[in-house]
Image 1 (cartoon, one colour):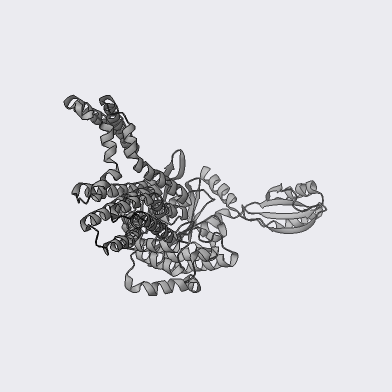
Image 2: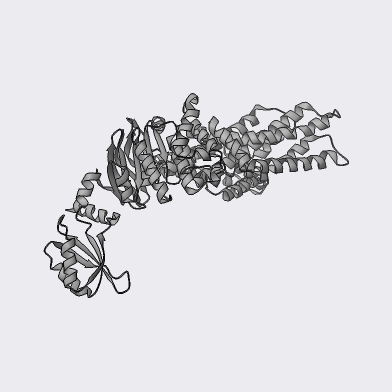
Length: 288
Length: 313
């Protein structure tokens, strides 16, 4: 893992994407800071600036993650990595941590902005620290999505565009939810669909009809049981489920200066899930 | 050292490798011979653990590839068909990275790298970016990568592809040299390459092993299939009739004209019979002038014809 991590960092700067990422990120962060904090009338509230910072992710994260795994399969260097005595998880984690390290450096540099405001004595430290943690966790989650996307293709440009689309979708979930049906019937249909999808997924991975049918039947049975016991639970179910995937909604609590365990755990498990999925995608390719 | 049994890889309907079974003893240099797309690379990828077999097992140094992949990977140095190089790194950065992921002991790394740089003849290139190296040097860096940590087994997929004749000879000599302390499997679609380097040949065609033998036995099997190629000037039909009249000639056929005003013939003697003198006299009788006479090339197609025909008998 260590060797992969170091090589990845080295390669960020030799292949210039590291400089492009840092440059873009800090350039836009500087503009946002200037406009929202320094420009008249000026504001001492750095949290708004940080919230705006999240929008840079839309462009910066694809740059950071596009070549992580796609380039390995294009150059066929994955053959070297996968035939070396290192674990697949180690390879993927090494790459993820390298992207995360570069992102952390960029974020740390923006720390000079609030320090600058602080010289006028107007920063609430707890709020600031929580907001930064929120930005970091949100960024780490989006990077894990980008890592996953780059394992799906051997073309950097496709990886970048898909990641861009995925991040856009994640931002849009909060708006999309308002347009979705909230009645019980829709909730039931949604849950049944999920049960069927679960069965299909099990079939695709195990190729065993009986196991897939058992999974599908028990999931549908669970849905029916839920319907019989608590029909009220189906009100606005789609929104509830999708909101659970909303990375942005959870960011709110951090910017209010509240450090809650729930959102932190949520982000960490989100990252872990996508790292795990990435490992699975690469491992499955051997069996294709 | 390597035991492969019933190894099969199926992609949808396409069977890339079927029931590949062979074993390689310590210190052997075994050549995989077959045309492009025969299944050589697929087989190598399964032995090295890059691909998982649909069926069958591969064991290296007593360890099963699927059950103990780490032990197997520690024993193997692999040069894939496209050398797995990072173009943005320098040669020495790259080799240091390989040494780290292969987990070679940190103490001996520098000496090991110097030895390999010298062995593969890339010592002068160590500070160059891999991106800027010629195809031949890239191939050598790929080979150097496989040698890092002195693995007991070397698997080299088309190690001389894309090299110029002088480099091909250098790499062949190097492989022969390496064969003294390593067990080697190398693949090629060129017959002379395999006969020049290997102690034993495994011929793969359409995903199956069609023959597996020592070089000596294989040449004996092939003797007599080669025959002569003759280029002559004059009446072609009369020449063919005269040559076919010779008792020791098994077969004579026209190969068309490759030079204006001449014709080419392919002539095969019975068994190991040397028919050059009789052919020359026969052509003289037919009123033809011989412009060229040489042993016909044994190409891969002939071998397959020969080998598959024998399998069928």
